[in-house]
Length: 219
Image (cartoon, rainbow, N blue to C red; front, side):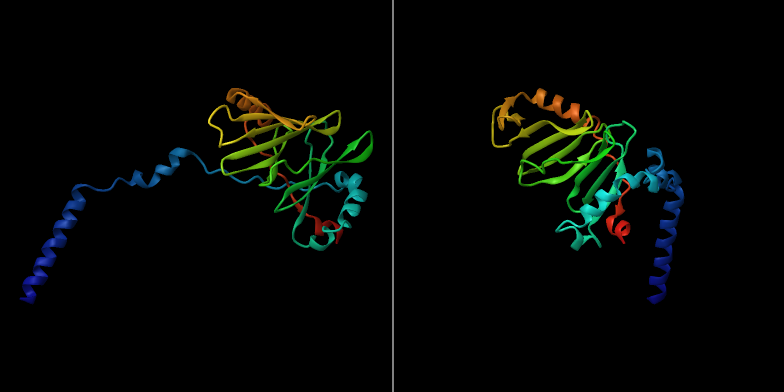
């Protein structure tokens, strides 16, 4: 009986092998990912030139001594240099890995000037985003509601440009534009909302910042 079982098992295995030979799996099935092109690579971080950081040395030292900064330098804070407005002068950006960009310094008429921007009109704030077209977006979203504020450099200074809001609880036109003077929201059409958003965010490409630990600079 045992011999019959072994013989039957051999016959079954032989049949399976024959089926496999009759319909081999194409080797190209394991190369399907190559049709999508090469995987994107992370750009190599640039080296910050000491000559570029030198004009901001005093501002960096002053900022590092601020309450709430000096105690968390060892792991949270970063600094980066980037020419936001494309005028050939790199701005100094300070921030944390959790909150994103917090403060920006620029050189205005040969003098280092701090450029501030409001965190957000919305309680559920996302880290500020810096787009390649020079726009900084603050704000956030939650439970379907969205509030975004946009900043750009104008005449060497960072200026508030526009605010957009969209609320999910409205069944009619639920888009609004924020007026910083009256601090009121004016209803706008969805098309206008999307036009303004595209105007400031462009194609949505976010800047890759070469972040350096601030603790390394002051140590």
